[in-house]
Amino acid sequence: MTSSPPSNNDESGSPNWGAVFDGIKDALRLPAWVVSAALIGVGPLAQAVGHPIGAAMASTIFVWAGPAQVLFYGGLASGMAYPALAFVIGLSSMRFLPMTMTVMQMLRRPKQSILMQFAIAHFVTVTVWAECLRRLPDMREDRRVPYFFGFAISCLVLSTFTTAFGYVLAGNVPTHFAAGLLFLTPVFFTCSICAGARDMPDWLAIGMGAVLEPLALHVAGPEFDLLVTGLVGGTVAFMIKMNRLNNAGTPA
Amino acid sequence: MIELLAPYALMLVVAAVPTGIWRAGAVVLSRSISSQSLVFEWVRFVATALLAGVVAKLLANPSGALALAPDWGRLGAVVAAFAAFMAFRRSVFAGVLTGETILILSVYVTQH
Image (cartoon, rainbow over all chains, first blue to last red; front, side):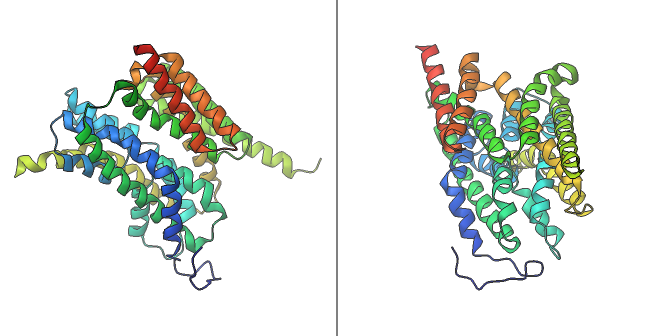
């Protein structure tokens, strides 16, 4: 709890920066450790293609997307052409469009500059997105942006160090632990998405995403499978939600 | 000097920009939509289904050391993680810990 003076005017009140510490505290409780452990794996990949440790750390700061970083260093290792690699990374990062829009809806405020909004957007990842879905709706608006930065920057700073740690460690990890590190991303994604689920359509979207992906891979190929999965699964769940709301709204 | 900076420039152009355009695009798109709009509700569902798809893809087509885990290990670990997550009143910690334990054991058992 912070002891700043109460600001009752949510619409025009300036951000309550004391909430930064709540964000840091929540991040260090678990999420920051999981993301940063997942990014240990990027270090050895960068080391394997002969890039300096600083570049590996910078990739965590500037890309801030584990799967994209793994694709980047993995693609370089397999000798992919740069434009093709950029294209594949771009497709894999498409999830940031709907994720960031969801976050912006909760964090934007009147008179907020577009630069501030770009700064917010840069820090969006699955971890941050899931945390926002869970915490922000019940939080006072003047506390949201400070909380967000406290949370997100803690995750990023810790992850930058673990990327370097992985670089130094490179290849000296027993295979079962190396597999465990790579498993962190899917298992943490699973729990994070489920933690945000509130009603039946939410669960349906999760279930459909998991079931549709192999089908979409078959039909749309490895570039566009996730796009198809998200659009089809998400739209069906959305329509069912709307249908339920309409039925609930009309008198029997 | 140029050789020293090349890895940084490559990372920015080939990885950071293709990722960042989606985040920046989301900011630009969001500015023209009212926060009450149902578009945001739809977009949230699309993101949720897409992320579940990402998990399915990572588990069905594992890369690196994760490919050393048997199919039953990867599937069993994620199912157990979900069960533990629900059993412990939606505890992400319990889920991750359970899933990791089973996955690491499955690789260890397969290799020994």
